Image 1 (cartoon, rainbow, N blue to C red):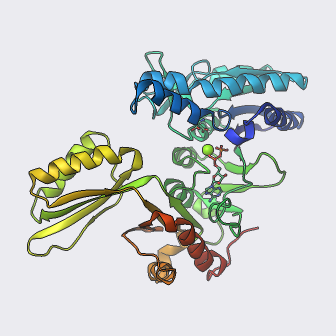
Image 2: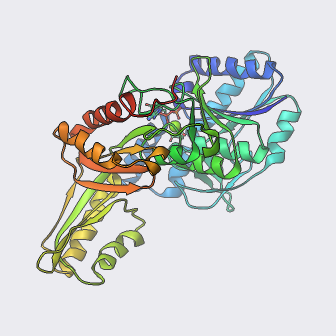
Image 3: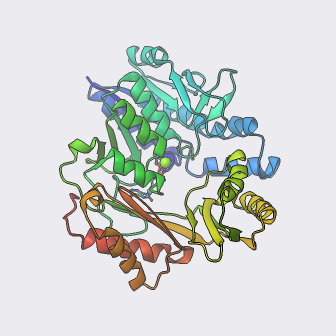
Length: 412
Ligand code: ADP
Ligand code: ASP
Ligand code: MG
């Protein structure tokens, strides 16, 4: 008997027909003799619709406590519906909201962190021979207030529950049948990876591959949870996210990712002297705005340009701050640009391969794509380009590194 945590994402529970299909899959696992805890997301589009309602009523930045009370309702609907659909198949199931299952988080509304899970509560349900149907994305803080974990947070709920229960496996069911070398909905030539290391998955998730929320990958790595990403609608193995040692051979590039949710701000003609960057970035960090890439040009005649990226949702605020500080420090101008995208290549094999960066830049140049910013780490290279070239860049890089890549990818 195994203890299995199964998580079903929004498209998997998009309507009652699909919820009934999910119920059949869950029951099939129960019939194999396993103990099953199921974590569900809200129906596809539901959370977006709730966020839009919140903004309609509360403005661009609605009260975070009330925002959480509202957006958590999406998952409350699906747990009840799934439990009913399981009952209809003649099996026992009980639904639990975050509060009911004792999913304790800190009080940072809209991006709360999980602190503790009441394992006994869930185990009692499983011991009674029932399926535990658990709401993803939501928790409760010490004050008893509803919290949410940030968009895509049901993945993190599922991994945290798997860790707390010491489950044998955490299965992430979604609308694709695994983790691919790039977004299969954009590039048909994308290949499914049989295995990927936590390190690479972390980079891919943080660079835009939304198939797993980044925090879920971190938690799985930290607690040694076996993660299996697979399809709700097809049978068969998906992708195992595992420790680096368990991935036999490292591809130079195992993934190409893109992100269109950032904006660029350029502060031109600032004095090249100590303290300028601190003046510029302190107000941003005080306002909780996360700066991603930063590039400072070599100075000419004692003055320089500083360019950086921020989440697009913070662009307006960040530009206002940059303009204000810019005036104080005597900058020539501060301008923003939302029409950018970040395209990245990720791979553990990059560590011991020379020439990856130059090949990336050559590939983009051959397509006539200008590179605006570059950032690198041991296992990734990211570039900022004009947004309209996103798809072209992703396809060209995928062709160059994966389809015609030096090492044959271990794909199926
Ligand atoms: P769910 O609603 O099940 O949580 P998501 O929409 O959050 O599903 O994530 C699945 C989507 O992630 C896929 O439909 C796919 O378009 C996208 N995706 C982006 N990059 C990748 C990748 N490298 N491999 C697989 N899917 C990817
Ligand atoms: N329903 C939430 C969202 O859309 C959480 C999730 O689906 O993981 O972000
Ligand atoms: Mg998701």
